[in-house]
Image (cartoon, rainbow, N blue to C red):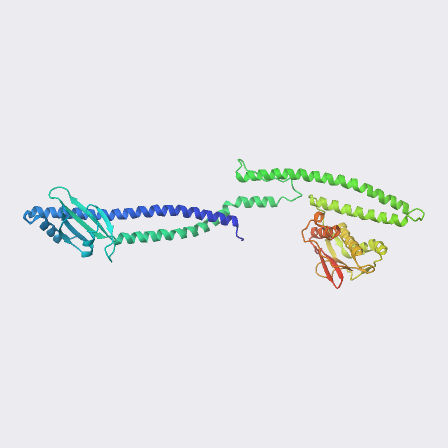
Length: 445
């Protein structure tokens, strides 16, 4: 299935919305968990500091003569504390007793003791945190607890890594999920496209079904139904005009041909050649008018039926016989190439008109005095060919409009192209050594 740019855009916006939402959530979660981890470590160290205070006070009550320094040393010596650095200081911050790594003890002096909680990194060591707890009653003294903050920092780094990794994963999942979900979301548009495609130019009375109450897509359907109403009215008006115009144009042409034929049946006179030319021009004009109105009706939504079984050999011979007088008048002989019985399905009148138009075109535009050759195709697909010597030429592009794009090579060839197209065939031109061969290829019967 081909990729849909609309589905891709929806998937991208879907993934972007997920990314922004998850990024905001991850950031708030990271800040919250980091603060909680820091607070938990601080609370643990404050608990240790409080416990050490109680141990110092207990030693002081048991041996009051040892003083605060002795009680602190004895408490630190007997106290089974977790790894860390511990100090007991007097009210002025002077060191009374200490225990622990020298680097951590030195880190305790990096900030004033008036700062309750401090986090830093001793030289070439892991990060540590320091907590100061003061005993505000007599005797006044303080306890400084310094512990490693490495575990908390590692937890924060792991958390940041996982939260950062979740962002590209969510983008990928959002793109895939958005593309899949957009197919279901856009299904009503696909249904609308299929419903519009089923409305042919000959069925403009059909209308799209509008739900109740209407949604945004139903609003588009209402507008499209209104457009169909306008097109249906315009098509009906166009058909009425075509019928009226055909009647108005054919009547004087019939009158001209009738008068010319009547005069030609009378006594011979010098005007007979002119009358013959007038009758021939009137016949050509009537045939062209019939072609144009047929083409206009087809474009207005009334295509001709193409379901007859046509004998192409018989059709070619009849057309050649009908055009033999015209060929004699222009001094161009008609010759038959290989002519074999070939059957095709189509509209016999249109196919005969196309053959006569090809012969007329070859007679008028070929080299004077050269023969025009006619024949049927011997390949898998049936067809007819007309060949004559002349200047090479090409056809209008396939799918061009004969009414507006037939000026370059004549309207007749453009109409023959249209006849071939409505039959499911094609018109081809090949030029070689000063000879043009026009082939009308049709589908098999």
